[in-house]
Length: 95
Image (cartoon, rainbow, N blue to C red):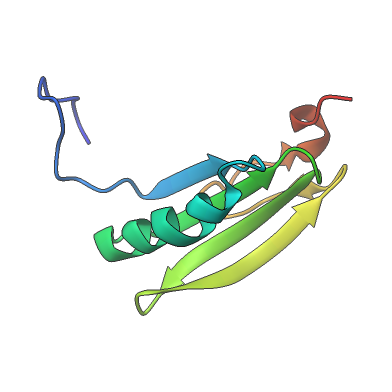
């Protein structure tokens, strides 16, 4: 989006969403929210589980989510839509 419109909402879906899972919202994030994201054409979704120290990377293919990768612990990740950079997962976790 070249500039942020001054409106309460807009009709442009993001290319990427990242959900931080918690025990109270994980089911909604994995079901309802992902279904809405797919319907709206979001192409990439990351599900971050700070308790399990994992990141599940999903790609939208033919209107359905496909697991593009599972990473965790101290993995260093390169994944779409940020494949040009390395993301050290260890920096995400609080001991």
